[in-house]
Amino acid sequence: MILEVKNLNKSFRHPWKLQKIQVLKDVNFHVDKKAIVGFLGSNGAGKTTSIKCLLGLLTFDSGDLKVFGKDHLDKEVKKNIGYLPERPFFYNYLTAEEFLTFYGQLSGLDKSQLDKRIDELLDVVGLSHAKKMYLKQFSKGMLQRVGMAQALIHRPKLLILDEPLSGLDPDGRRQLVKIIQNAYDNEESSIFFSSHLLDDIDRLCQELVVIKKGVVEFCGKKSEFVDRGDRKFQISYNSQGHRQKLKVDNITQLQKEIDTIRKQGFEIIGVEQEKVSLDRAFKEFHGQEVEEVEA
Amino acid sequence: MKFASLVVAKNTYIEMIRDRVLYFVVVFSLLFMALCFALGQLSYDEIFRLSVSLGLSGIHLCFIGLTIFLGCSVFFREIEQKTIYTLLARPISRDQYLTGKYMGLVGILVTLLFGFLLCFTLIELLLGMPILLTSYYAFIGFFFESCILLAITFFFSTFAKPFLSITGSLSFFLIGHWVGTLDYIIEKSEDLVFKFFAIGVSRVFPNLEALNWRQFAIAKAHVPSYEVVFSVTVATLWALFFFLMALLIFRRKDFE
Image (cartoon, rainbow over all chains, first blue to last red; front, side, top):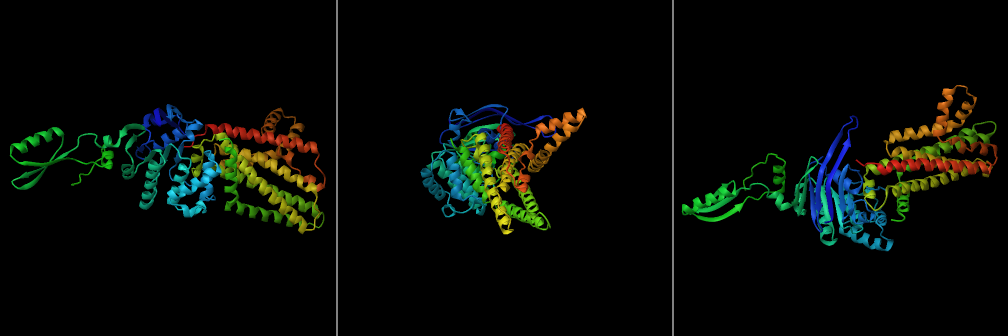
């Protein structure tokens, strides 16, 4: 296991009142080796707070955070973590090359290793042409990509990304998704990334951690999350030369209806389980109304 | 990482020295300094005395202003731009980070001080004034005073917003230059309550007036070496004290 969070509790003191506001309540989750895990939750659910606790940017009330089996603040652990915060703005007056050199040196890489690595990474994130450009000349998408490069510069075993795709246009999002996928495929990194953009999580992740109001409500495979609860079925059958479709609500009803159709002497062509998107599963999970869409 | 502080210091220096805002403030400071010299030229008598006095005062004020501006803005920017998050996520301790920032800014102050010193010398040459070594003692004082104030701005910036940090640092600057006078008043006063509080104030605030060697430049006299050594030692200790206070707070700071 790469990352293990046990019973994490965090509260903030109200600026004017004496009482504390608890934002994380016994948070438990884990990230396995070589996995892309999506950290899903609405705004204010506690995603960024959990990540900040993990990185030592916030102290926490209680809990046990282990990365690679060691304490999360251990320097050896930090050498193997790459991090990109939400909507970062980096040093305006550094060039992309200087910026990556700086972060590489902080991670213990020497100059000879860095030169090669910087060229390689800038190529991966599509910024080779901007090597000598000041970061203040970069667009939001370019900043996000150079931010990804700084997170990857030291070949981390765990990459933590906080809302990496928010604020980007569709093209920027597509490019960054490609870079994240590339980091997973070629850099041997496990990736833990928070987002409220369900499409991207759906596209990238095999596993999910779902947090709601400071409580982790699900941790496991994405397919398990999507298939939670009763799913509808659709039976297709031939009735006197006409193709008919019948929708049933659950598996018991399905068996019953199949028997009835057969008894009537009709031919069953197929049975399909309703396909649910992550978006719909998430809405159902949150008890929100889901619009019925005819397939 | 062994030399993480040096890496942070180098980056801070490069980032700051290229900042256009800094150049705007420097140009303003140079104009102010030139104005101070020009005012000295308006005198009928003792042109040297007045020009050096006003010129050094102008440099002093500008340099202190720059110190407070740099000290307060560097933290605010790092937190606003979230660069501090990515830095502290690296294998670098908060102590190393803060030390690196301080060293980088001291580097900037040294560069600026040399710039001011050069301009001061050029103006003196242009005005046909004698170039005396005694004029340069004041610059040593400016440097150590700015080191204390930089540590004070770091101390305030670890827990306060820029406005409060600037106000706090300016208060230390003003009271620090008034402590000498306060000591004199304490000596003369017979009011015990006043004495109690005034002694408290004079012990809490560093005596910045001890680093004011402008009068030696005006009098064309050398500062006694024991005074230089003593004042510089005390100033270093004050800077260290405020820097350690800043470190203690920064170690526990939450980045919400």
